[in-house]
Length: 517
Image 1 (cartoon, helix red, strand yellow):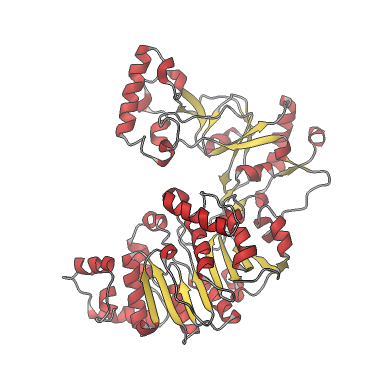
Image 2: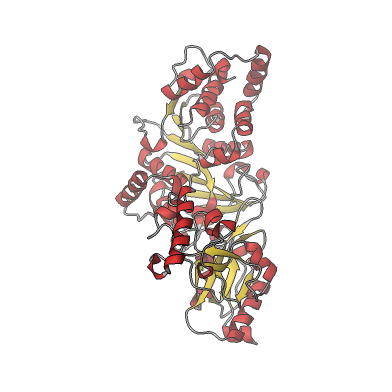
């Protein structure tokens, strides 16, 4: 269908040409071509919709190919229109072209620059551009946005789009080094745990000049997590952040994902005016991104997380203190391959002492309630030591046989295994006196760990900084379960609320003496 809609004079990139040649013997029915052309001219995206249906959602998500609903596209485009009359529009991850097409209609005299790596997406983009008759005013770069250069432009450049969300696990070390060094040039320390969308903000700043404007919609997790501190500083000091609109989880900004979205607006060079912030619970409430409450930049610089600025928490009672004053909170260990390291029939021959009862799913805590009394219903996690010489000769034979099987399953090749001191040693943390869930469609469940179970990364462990009595911890668990709601976590589309360890530590509680009353 793309080929049928694209102008025959078009010069394809090498990657596109391979796709075109693979279907050279096929052709679309003319009546269907006409239907697609009519829909595109009406402002619809039948190619993008088809692509989203045909390509598996997990494949699209891993590449960050999640297309933005039109109400969000239109509101972001309207905001650009209120800011400037740009000479050119740049979409850093164009996909089928929803943003570049919307901007092209609003700014008929602007040059259009669309950047996209996926050759099939580029074909959809070309088809949409050709149907609108904009081939002459559009430059399509089949490239990684981080690698492009832009020629100088006398007028304003407007950046708009949905930068792809790709986890740091899938970003190469060379790009992580690029990321750290570019941020360092701005005197900003950057974490290697950042997702790809933050790279796009950084590259935009490297490409932009004072007076350029932009609006990006991304996952909102950078508002709170540690790796987001670099982006938060970039927005305040270098990129010129001027507005932040956080979409409530009732809005499915990224269809098929459980992610809360944030729309970030910026004007390069702005460092003094307040940032306009607000929480939006309905698409029709976007209103061109003009509303919100002005927050001084100094307040944002002082805030350890920005979601509490956008959505202030409930008032805390006088004299309250942070839970972290009494507990260190640690997420459970990541196994890297649950199918291998959670014991089943494949672990029958292993010594019982290396199969430790553990919390392996949130339901373990939800079913236990405020007190986990027994290990009987818990699954076991295989936790071998780094040094295997402590085992008897017979035990070692059985362990070696298991490890040979595990290696054949690729257990030594995963990201987590390759970064452990020994690929076979999961390294479970010591039992935590209190355990809690960290993601659910409800507040976290706090549970006394009376049976001394271990936990993997489906739960957090609360470890006392100083000795606390059993009665004190029991009363604290009861208070937490009765009083903590979802306001302090980060809520994602679909109602999932997530609490990172530091967010648990920042929960405000009364004094322990008060709790004991």
